[in-house]
Length: 396
Image (cartoon, rainbow, N blue to C red):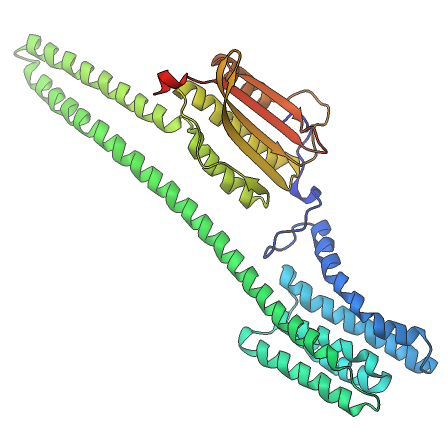
């Protein structure tokens, strides 16, 4: 656990807007999305002002306010349906019917200030209807708004044609963006699964190549020793000694192979950090390459990067993370410096956890150092790991 976190902080406490195309996981995220939708209700200022100015009878004002409230509830219910809180089919049909009916009735009975309701009808159609019907519905809504305006005694507000068309067709674009985002997430998950499967197959092939010959030889010599044992025990002992040599060599080969698979690579960890941060909805700046290092120093930095990114994803509540890997010349000699900085909650003042303590031990073992603490400007956490680097001549 990072030093600035005393307990695990769940993602719902970050205050971030939920990622597009995903349903809100908590009540807070639900209300954040509701707030974003409710911001656009500010355009209902004209109908509200018309009711407040007392241009109508008390009964008409009361009925107009009630109709406006029902309209807003139906509109929000339909639009927020796209955020993962789906309504039932019957309720969706009722709301889709109520919106245009209320827009026509309220506009004809209360005046042209209420024509703005057709803009919300167009947006709701763009957000909910099947795509093959959406465009026709938006055009029909705009035509209905124009026709309703012509039926009024005053001059209709033709400027609303553009918002009605733009709002409806914009919602089509948003739906396509959501669909594409979901498909990209699914494709990324499939790619990760395929990569894992390919790694398992590669490990299986390598183990087969390493052990196939050795195990066949062990089996052959075991059978030969069994046949020699009754009459020629000294020859059988030679075969058993060969079996021991082959088995020991096979064990060494397997250990070397497994060690190679388990040792983290800094370049691979950079790529993994990019994927992990993107999956968590964190904007990441990650370099593509890393300087050449001996195996022990590279492994220490790779473990440091993995631990730091894990803490950013699980505990920081950050929106942005910047990772840097650079070679520097110091008075003590050349070093490679890994920096992981986020704009999350920052240090909590508690003692460092086991994760940072383990990283410090790893880095100390290879002659490196670890610094972790506040980012220095505003909220955030910054981890800096340094390991000695070979000189240019020796690296060449």
